[in-house]
Image (cartoon, rainbow, N blue to C red; front, side, top):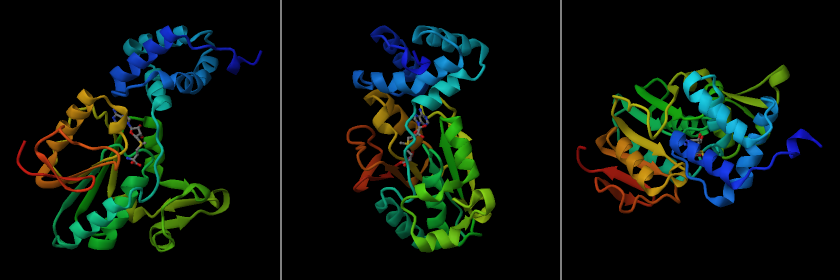
Length: 276
Ligand SMILES: C[S@@+](CC[C@H](N)C(=O)[O-])C[C@H]1O[C@@H](n2cnc3c(N)ncnc32)[C@H](O)[C@@H]1O
């Protein structure tokens, strides 16, 4: 039998693995995710020459003390990284309006707090470049828990056929066409790349940055957390916002009843009203 198809994930093994991803990343997984988990982790059983998911779980427990990187691979495999340029574009229109009211010399800090492969952070950078100019004093922080996806974000190189949401004028201005072995790719121009710092960050456990932000994007990640974690993450991120600053969750992620100091000012747009 093909090794990739021979493994069965029992309910007990699934429970152990979902408890672990919940502990490490805050991600809650319903019973419906059992076959997804089995499918995504199967390759690791083969690569490590293991015969069951229980053995894989034991290897992960060992990694908690020895730290050989398997835990990070486990997190990388169980996170969902779907994203695209200018996703949920109303946020970018609001960002443009906000920027058009700011003095050009004002220093602006924006955080893309679950940046995935970088499309969100680069879309923010393009919007800032359009409104403020590339050389104005703005900076973007892009963070994610997945090290694999962050290395893609840092490269800023995307397959042309998979680039979604980016208009032709934006492509012409802010992307370079690859040559030779990169002819099927687009690369973000260096002037934009250098305005963004990509760093690993766990929304639940990492120490918070000391800088205060004008806007924090934390989109399409809260849906993976339970109410308690959602609340904690919102509270933690809100403490990093300037008073008057904005918080952008994904369009399907309401903050209703989760944090009083963030006031709803437009659909999926919240403003911090007082110091926390
Ligand atoms: C679906 S993507 C959203 C990307 C982007 N914000 C967007 O809306 O297009 C969710 C991202 O959240 C990250 N993530 C999941 N749990 C996390 C955690 N505890 N801390 C930081 N990032 C996390 C995943 O690695 C993934 O890249």
